[in-house]
Image (tube, rainbow, N blue to C red; front, side, top):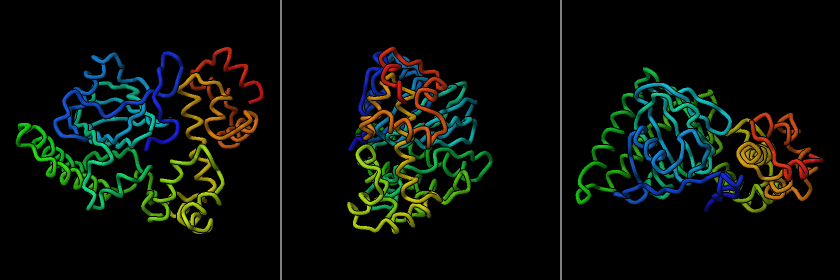
Length: 313
């Protein structure tokens, strides 16, 4: 299922955030591709898209930088890229290559359905949010992941008749499980600390954040108490369930304000606020600035229609 707000749009018309489908020029193995990062950039240029353009993807990407330097922006955080940088983008996250620079490396693309369902790697793929960037540097894990990615590339590059999707699935599962062993980049515990309760809650949150912000609604739908959800959220994020819900809504609001020209009133309705004024109060409470001021700070100049609709926000 594509989460709310993930619909495509024509950026030239200020529509929704552009979304890239899994559509390699030659799908040798359904649901999986491995290419050089430089090849990916060149492909996007040929299609008329700049690497630094903002976009979402509806699949997973894993990138291990092996040479050069640059920067990658993911949901308002810019990560420096250098040899040993590992980046995992999950479906729905908003990204851009803020500074492609001279970076190159191995770039995996795979759909959520591709990893084997019998392995615990499926849990990692189904976690909506987790660590995004690791700086491995001289960490031995860099050599381990480089070796595994080399094996994936070697298998993928076999003739179309002899390449084994099953071997690719198993190698990818091994890569994901090795990544799960890495320390959390900011010292946190990670989403799996909340167990199955948190995983189920996050999946429901992705489906429903635009229609309800009440913790009791999520508890009722999942068959838990609010107290149980709060314990799971606190274990995974350090925050109670209501803060996690509101944080998800605020993130989507920031994305839409920064990367589209939609009027504030339209964004408010998309996120379940009948009145722009209530949305403005919510956004200011969670970000410290009104929607209009945030949009201007991101370099997004509102149209005349947007300014009219933002009057009370």
